[in-house]
Image 1 (cartoon, rainbow, N blue to C red):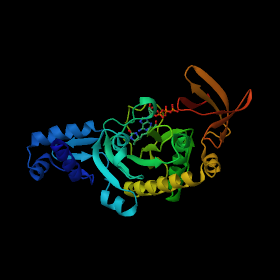
Image 2 (tube, rainbow, N blue to C red):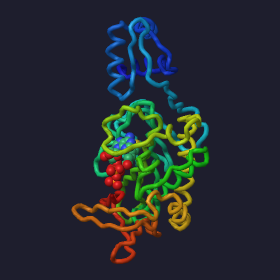
Image 3 (cartoon, rainbow, N blue to C red):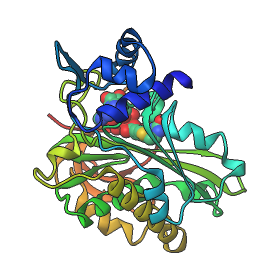
Length: 320
Ligand code: ATP
Ligand code: BTN
């Protein structure tokens, strides 16, 4: 933990994007220049680009707009915890559901083990994106949890639009897309027993200022910085509007169900009217997307007529 705190102090000194010499950094932190160099290497392993220029010192490739727990907490009714480093914000909440108030939020600047669906990795460099999870207790039980990732997607896209980020769309069942590239992913995980309340953890990872040279993502991706060129991006404001919008959408869903969300989803569906394929293990189904139904299933017009598909094992892809 001490090791992390040195790296975090170094980052705070460099956050503005100005050059800072190794000597000065060492003096400020009470460590040697060699130790500064070692910690800088460690920071680079968190996915942050730092340059070293002879005679000038270290500089971040892009300035950092770090999250501020107090600012976020003051703006939302939900209990909020912010960690600089965590394995996974979803995992953190899942391990604590018995002691959390419904609506509790966990945010992190870096995830060492961020995850997507079916155990896939979510690339989570430090300070450049958003990683946020919310715990929600659903008294109606697990069956009512179907379709929830769709409700969350609608809430997040509408929250973005409310602060000027237009053009973000949804890919069934759990992705946000911008210009046919993945901007964000949603992961809903659950514990609980049949017949009892469901403990849901809803996680969202959104690329905000993903370093351009990110190589580890094996599909086309986008960052929010590309969505509204010129619009100032404030990560704290984004975290606040996402938490507020998610909280409201989950309350509405509990009270009124999916009904209201169907037209809202269909307006934002990236593939509506377009030809796609659904991958289900070895099986592929081709068809044209007609939005979603009241269970959260995707509607596909296939050669056999209109069909609905639902389930966590299905992946939707653009048909070539
Ligand atoms: P589907 O769930 O429909 O199969 P998917 O391929 O996007 O879609 P997910 O499990 O939803 O799969 O998401 C994980 C995938 O997302 C990873 O395998 C990787 O391709 C991609 N990915 C990982 N990190 C990021 C990121 N920060 N931004 C965009 N995409 C990412
Ligand atoms: C996906 O596209 O498969 C979903 C990606 C979800 C990533 C977020 S980041 C915050 C939360 N913590 C995790 O480990 N995963 C989710």
